[in-house]
Image (cartoon, rainbow, N blue to C red):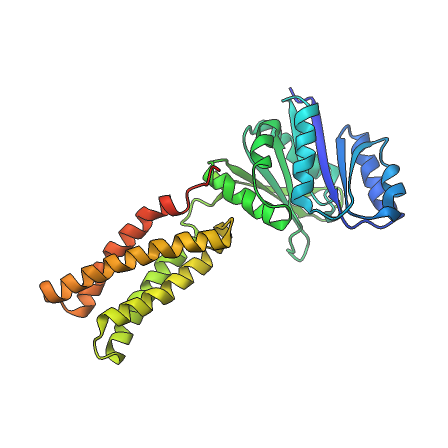
Length: 314
């Protein structure tokens, strides 16, 4: 049984006397939503403005702007302490124009899907997307509070963590219709936070290996068949491409770069040994030796991903 419908609204910036926002708060309050509003560093001049909302909402104030991620996590801690498990939480940017009907749709879907992050996205007539609305049940509070990041990185990290922890994402698209009071809804379930088709970063990895092979053959000609030098240089180029395209996964760029290139260095040494064996011991042509070593390299590479991208529990 659903007992509590809570809306978290991080607010920055806000302008004194913004009646539209006050009307929106009143509308949510009238529809039985419990409200948590975070004054995220708007300043002394707006204190009285937020004071007007205290009869309808729990208002939290930050002296300085700490970011939406930090605001959401602070509100989640408050909910964790003051509400029970029969609770659905939603958060979004109020200025993105979500209607009460759309918010209710997210609320119902989130309540129906335990341990699932429901994301509602809205596009206008020009197909320009708005910032999404999130809906989720009480059970996800502890998980969402462990995700790193205080600003925009928080939202990116939530998607990554959902994949790592096998938490499904259920997406809903709201599109405007001719009537301002109605809308179309398109639903799409995204298992484990990613599409079921091969992920973009996997395609990039395969592409970088293809580049590596053909660049090796080109450099082999220009280097007078110095295959060791050609292989090291081409692997360096393809690794940079692969690492750059994977950057969306990183929590700490410096730490991930250290781990990634340490592993790649080890694999490159192994590949060079294989090349030398194939060329000098088995007398294979360079292009065949490189093809065999590339296949073995790819197998070792993907086998190492489980180690390389594993979640740091600490």
